[in-house]
Image 1 (cartoon, rainbow, N blue to C red):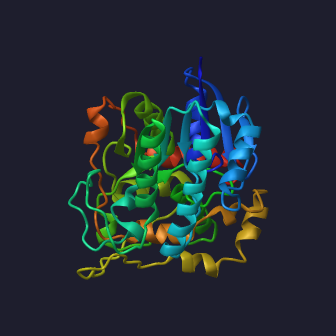
Image 2 (tube, helix red, strand yellow; image 1 turned 90 degrees about the vertical axis):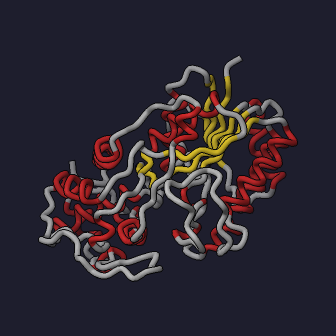
Length: 371
């Protein structure tokens, strides 16, 4: 009997990548997408569920009525963002707890549960009491400055329920995820594209948001399609383990930023990044805030979208603060792939070609950028 996959958070950048990977894997005879918004992918069933405002019993009922009771595998990507870290944890803890207990009730055939968390496991809120040594490893100590941080809560609950039910559990921890989804604000590639495109259209030089120190520092990226390929691999080759996943080697903005500018024909200033002091202990250093830049151009964005007949909501899909954070963290962010390599994962991808450029091309297809 073929396997049946349930994909929670199916309309986000990770859920979309997972569905594409699952469609290419003959192991899975059915793919069932769980999300609030519609999923219109050929060969994929959709069960609409509001995970935030539904009880355990209601979620279980929707799963049973939607034919998800035969599921053998869960891939869990559902996530609600909030700038308040304690609120973010409270929302996502409830969302995950209700979902996994509903799955426990509704899916008696389940054998595997995969949860995606991320590098914020090592630095909740992109900060830390004391950063773990580099490269980050899966057994690093947990941080205590965010009460009941949801990555810790979710992994603990997963282990507890999986042991009770006899499921195999696996966890993947990507870094900055590169992917595209309309109406999803979690991709830095989407925000990056809109910032560079609009800067050029407004006749501005492409200003790097962070200082020179951040421009030259090592950081990991995790292209969504590569993450999904690994996640399908690890549910077959690992038992009850957590894994970092990245593109394979760290990037530096001094390499990717000029390539991104070149894709759009944007002009870089000289110098590209300002050499300003980063004080000891600073965990974010923004020199030119993209969030403030976007506020200044707020009334210009609809006109720019109309000029090229783009989706009228194009610029609403950006998370400008994410660029300030990504370009303004004055410390390296690098995780070890030793655990993934130990189970036979050998793949690496090119962060610019397979990540950023592929996302930009996809945005053109989705009418979020001019063709």
